[in-house]
Length: 432
Image (tube, rainbow, N blue to C red; front, top):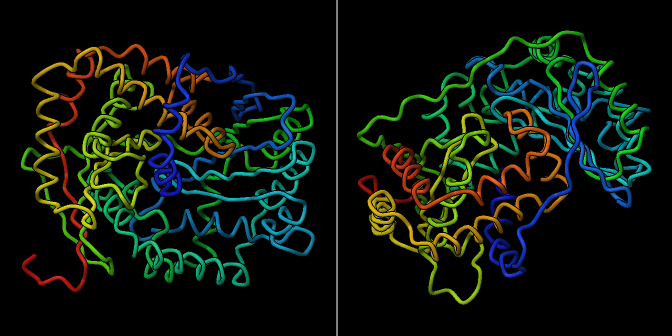
């Protein structure tokens, strides 16, 4: 879940709940074989625009501290690789499509969207770059500069900084490294580092493709060709294990060029395939909405005092609660936050309240699945995490089946230990 999705789901969740009535159902997704890659698809024969997400086992966990940023730099080189004389991202744009990528803890995923009848050709165009990326200085130098600019931009987003601080403390191994690396680490990476990373990790056996829209035979064939263009075999398996969070609630402080303090409190959380998944979806919505009861409208991120994000698409999953210093004194909000969590642990939620927060959680989940990019991404990442091909409906079923006892048990299990990350303005007095 990126910050764009976070802001959108905070703004739209309440609206979707108001649409109300019968429990929603997504079209049933279908799993097929791309030999040896997996393919998960949700078909809509009448779709005018379709999308596909391609997952490669080339995430942050494949880096070392010395090569931090190589996963992002490799992906950036892929999308800049010339096809027919122009970078593949521009070649796809000239045909009416879009090409984007994201690097996370255990994968790099590329997203392609376009008119349904053109999507197979767009995938075939991308396959040419993916099978033979240009890592020469002519491509590497602007790729590095682009990532450095994005790093500098993200340093001014307090919530992003706070979440990264928590991830570095919670994630074991390289999965906690900054998603884009650092300007210093990027400067030390050469063409040979990128070529080695690509050779070791961009392999057929580590791929998953997920698509939403018109799933014509031509699209399946284009994806087969893309898979066949990569080296055979699969990268070695890596288990992503979190560090044990101490009982004394570690506190991490950083100073950035931000307008007001931001407090991020991070907890461990169940993976999507866990029996506790639905209960944690409800806890996310309960906490995020408990502090805005007097508002007449649904508040956007920047207007909220306190909010919660269940980062279930990460591995390991986590729950992040933020306190927005632009809106409320962080000390007061943190105290109220733990009063709410302790009350959940001590007393089961009543039936009416549970029904309400189930509806809110359902609306939030739907919002996170409303776009083609979100839907295709969740299909693939949920499948990779063991939730099955019909993962979106399985998630809704888990939410609906949650009982007050489940909610209380999950609150006791996951909300006892946490890490506090505090992002302060650089201009604040040193003692604050």
